[in-house]
Structures are given as C-alpha cells and as structure tokens.
Length: 481
Image (cartoon, rainbow, N blue to C red; front, side, top):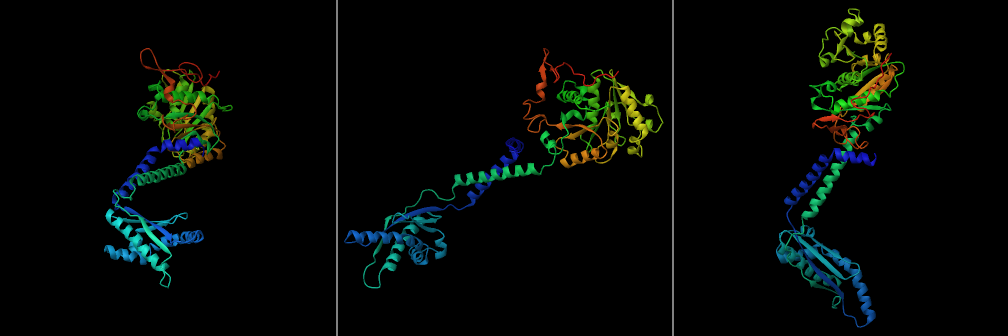
C-alpha cells in the first residue's frame, strides 16, 4: 500500500477509529474508577560505616558500605524486617501480603536506601514506611554484629521520615486515560486496515486495476431518485448523472470496435445498473442526431420496455422465431433517431436464440441501418447469454456497481467473456458516490461532479462546457452513410 491508500483508509474509517479511541478512553476511565486509590509514602535511610581513625580505614569503610547497600535494600521485603513492622503497628496482614506493598531501592553511587510503602490510608502508608526503616536498621545491626562483644561496623540511620500524602499515587488518572486512548487508537487503526484488506468489493479505479487491465471509460454517480426516474438523460438532462452518461458516450469513440458499431451492455450479476446504463447511453447518443437502435436482449428479466414506457409484449423473441417482422416490433421513441426493440415474450431457450443465425443476421442488419446499436443483455455469471451475444458484436461494456460487486465476481465475468473470445470494450463504474474517497476521480481531478455546472442569469443550473469543448453534448458517433 502507498501513503495515499492509508489516507483513504483513514478517511473511510474515521468513525470506526474515533469510536475505538473513545472506547479505550472509556475503558480506562472505568478501570480507574473501580480501582481502590493507594497512597505512597517514602522514608530514606542512610548507611554508614563505623568511625575510622585514618583516611585509609575511612576509604575501606566506604567501599564496604557501598558494596552492601543493595543487599540491605533486598532485606526490606523479608519477614525478618516486616514481621516487627506488623507487630508494632498491629496490622492484620501476613508478611507476604505486606511485602507486596513495601519496596526499597538503592542507587549504586550513594549509600542511601529509599523505602516506599503503599496503603489505602495515607497515614498508615507513612507509618509502615517509617517502621520498615527502623526495623531494617535493627536487622542490619544484628546481622553485621560480630560474634564477639564488639559493635556492628555498619550503622543505618533514618534521615528522612515519611509523611502522609495528600493525593493518591495510584491510579494515575491522566496516564490511564492516555494509555487507554492510545490502545483504542491502535486497535481502531488495525481494524480499519484489516477491514480494508479483507474487503474484496470493487470501489475505485485502483480496485479495478488489481483485477484487470480493461480500461475504465466511465463513472456513473449514484442518485437516490434513479429508481423512479431511470431515464435521467431525458428527465433531468442537466444533472450530474446525465452528464456522466454523456461523458461515457464521448469516451466510447476512443474505444476500437473494429468493423462493428454495436455494443453489448452487461454486468456480472443483477442489480448493477446495466439496463439504466444501456437506455441512458442510447438516449445520449441519440441526442447527437445519430440513428440509434436499442435492443432489449435480456430475454429473462427484461427492463427496457418498462423504463421506456412502451409496449413490450411482442419483441426480439418473436422476431427471432419468425412470428413477427422487424418493422412490426421496433418502435420509434421520442423526436430523435432512437428506435427501441423490446424483448417480447420470455422464451424457454434464450441462449440458443441469441446465438442463432437469425440473431446474427439481425445484428448485421441493424449495424448497417443504424449508426449505433446497443444491446441490453443479461448478467454474465448466472447465464451465458451476454457472452454469446458479445461474440457477434463490437464487444461488451461491463457495468460494475461500486461497493457491491466483488473482485471475484468481476474476474468471473471477464473470464466468461474471454472464454468465448468476446471483446471487452471497457468498464463502467456505476452507483459511484459523489463525495468521499470512493468518488469517481477522487484524488486525481480534484473536483466533483458539481464542477460541471454554473449558474445562468435566471439562477438555474446550466451545464458548462463538456470535456470535448462543445456546448450541449458532443456527437460521439458519426452518422453512417
């Protein structure tokens, strides 16, 4: 992954990351509130040697004392030191329990021992620390005293007594909250990266590039009203979605289709927007003045007739079996050069009909009579209809729903087309969000679909110049002579 990929992950999962960070802070706060506060108290003990009569003896005594300081600090947690503390203070604990609350440390360069005691009561903690210091001095004196009646060569003196603390030493509220936030942040970031890694859905152009080298020739933004207004190029020609279909129309002229002027619009699975793409692409091309034939070749779940609001009881299936002629079933739509051939009745053998000689003859005739022929075909994964049909046309235009189609589905659809040597003209990314990191062109163009529009003198939206520099749409297909 590149830096930009991580930035996209952060932008897409910022709510998740913030939620885990707050969860970590909340967990740390809950732990802090449930833990019993403990007060700490420290007493300092000075270790010295017996008075010497010469500098040499004094040096030897200091060296001996420094070598024993660490050992004396270890004695603090032993029962010989702690049991007298328990007895003198009347504590109801064992020496092992008290050892977990008393510690000692000694610096290697000094002869000072710091004894620290913790307790839920500040006064008790100070009493334990002071008692431990006195007990340690007594134990060391007893241990270091020779068997003879001579005195101990080492003396421990309490030089700083412990006092009761005003505030608890644990829990450290600020530190706990900071650690909880950091742990939550780390978990949130890790989950965001894992979620992105495990997500196999196609969302952006970079996701497509990981599956295929087929070019992306269009991105259709998602609009809530597309279900009730499928013919967006006709009903709302100045909308971003309509402009996207005109851009797709323009980009098609750069795709080589050989001797054919026909295209099959299909998808890997249903509900990816192939039918709306086919009908709006037909409308966009027809707006240029070209003669366009829109054929509903989905002989299983036809949608074109209902979208175009025409009679669809008789159509392609009837034509292919000889029950009707082309002039009887093809209907002129609108004021331009758009003609629509509905699917007709659902036959029992759609794949065979679409691969028949009659269908090949129909394709050849339509390509001769019209400037551009668009076939709306079934999805590729459930059935082979689209792959069979695409083999006899200029190729297939594969519609991929952003955030819905998985990479496995896209790969399977491409394999189905390649199996029958069908040319894939390009990929159209449909249902693309207009905002956020998954928006079409995010991070590459620096503007959204709103950049295509200006305000006219009347305050209404007016479409600005399209990508090829003309006003009101550029002919993507030249008229055939």
